[in-house]
Image (cartoon, rainbow, N blue to C red; front, side):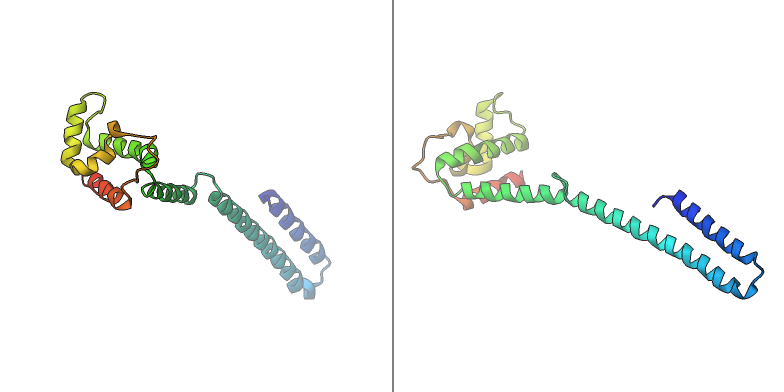
Length: 167
């Protein structure tokens, strides 16, 4: 409800009470005053309820945003579950989905660019992960057509992620 409607409604109520009061009937004055107060309270209550409804609609719309915090967290969780399940798949799955992410994270964390100095990156990777885990992070060791060999599993992924986090 707009403020102008409230003002006009209140003015009409006051005008009606004034017209009735001009009739010189003092015994009706408390009733007439009560009508004005009741009308003002009704208008106030209506505006408060309408504002609450608008706020509720706005809150609902905030939760329905496609990229809102709840949706982003849900997508992140689903992606993390999918990536963790790839750790138990084949080597081709590991090389296609996990190795690029792990190699990029290592490159960003260590500051060694793979394209600039391959030897330095390899040495840093072996020092950080050890030779057994480095072979699962090293982007040069990819074999996306190997569907028979098993991926190292979640334990290896957890250890690689822990070592990346410690950097």
